[in-house]
Length: 215
Image (cartoon, rainbow, N blue to C red):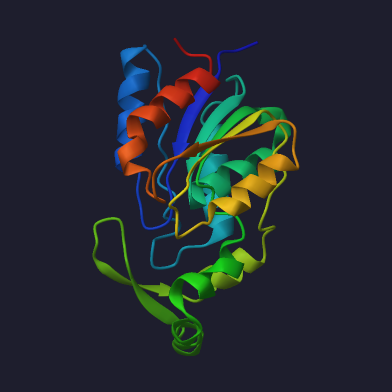
């Protein structure tokens, strides 16, 4: 079989230049391996759309028509993307590492932002949110509609490791605990960290290399 391919899928309001993505790319490069880091702000952060995000992964895969199965790392919304793409293309993915995966995002947004702000977002059609550079950007309400058009909790078809911080206030760890407990091929690793896992980046790199059997 052809050699495995590797990719890091960033989260919401992030980019391929995220701290975790860069750290992972460096670790892979030190071992002579390439780590793809596609830009998932599709068609743009302002017009972000779930179907377009998945298409970005389709395009990445199309560039490697004869490559082996993917081993994907996904952070937050990128974790959902990795899981959903694997669900849709089970023959193209054989391992996943999900970092605080953003499952059920559409259902959780009101808890994160508050009902009043959600209502204003829907009423006005856009809401200013910070992009990867911290600049306010009017993100369209269609992003929420697109989230609701997709399954909130994809079924991963392959061995999967979830790394999740116990102090996460964006995506509660209880969600990952329930997900892993119901699926024997999913292993949960709990970290003493918050949603960004900033303090745990060395551990994240270590666990990704171990899961992907990279020395």
